[in-house]
Length: 501
Ligand code: GLA
Image: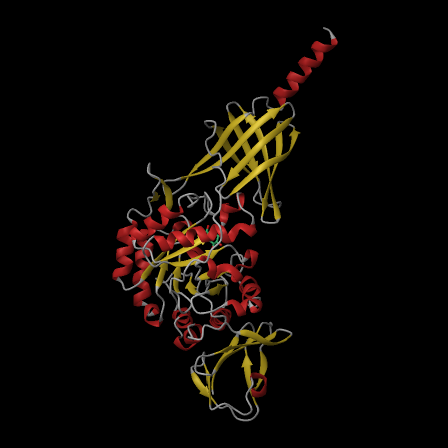
């Protein structure tokens, strides 16, 4: 055997060991409970020991930047830019007969999960092309959300389990629990209601939501309003159909269904657009909602990137998230809530900072911690979107969510967001100016010990004791004698006062 022939045979053997026919479009197709499929695509091209191509899953689209051969396959590393940050994924792939076995880990410490990809037609799952963006202009006011929106949203508690029946029951419970009477109004369906598009491009709901219009009619018949969710990208964060290239059509569909509120979540728009382009992207839907002929509250969800508070109103936004996602625990809630001070100048009537939805009642915090959550969000003039199961609330949770005196602080007509006036270790005082010239005060104890906190009237601009001071959680007036007020504040708790001039 000559040398050239033996090299060729060795190369062929190596290629076979490394899986010589990885080239092609592969898809992992996982059925979901709502009748849709979760598809992950690996569009690969193998050239000897090198693999290039792309990996697409849910809201992410990675280019393969590194491939290494392993004992029986390849380790592929995908990379994508997300704003100014790079995201990476690592997949281990090997050919087993006609299948591509794909192993991933949710994070470095997670157990490996092996899934099976099969050959898909070329082009399936390919990204659409990048659509041009409009020139910036000011979207006229819609006149909605004069005070911070109040309602309920499915995501925090239900995730993919939200369906037609639970939404109807939540509307019923909002009425029967007294939440509607306390001011809660919107029943908002978050992600995972979507299916696909019909041949004319109109979006269809998945089998959990057989008739969106009938559902909206039902919610309206309870004297409430209904909200929905979409993304400016081709897919939502959970990988469902987004509004990319269908903005006007979707706004029209939502209007036809009777939708009153849209949460519009950046998600896969990150594949095409930089953070600096967000304003134009959000303006597109702002215009589309206006053109739909129905008044729809517009909620921007892009995690507080690119100083959204500065341009949110320009695109017709009524509220905008200022942070990443909240979780039902003390660290997450306080990390978000106590970091909102700098945004306060941007809140005003019709346009609100949104530090994310409430976790009150979801079980991960104590009642004192949930009172801190409710008090802080109210002083921040934040949207109050309950995220718990309203059908099944302990009385203590219902009392926290429906405390009308606290809600009145959130809903105060000045539209001003409160600010931190002092911080001493774990003790923080936050103050919000009210329309009647009074003030709401939150004495927050973030520490692990009960403590005494002191409020000097001079520190909140008063020369002497105010005429009336009300403790909003004790629901009683307190004696404002002397130059200050001293309160026992439990660990992780709050004393919330309303000062009358
Ligand atoms: C993002 C949002 C959440 C929720 C999910 C749904 O993470 O920030 O509030 O809407 O998407 O997929």
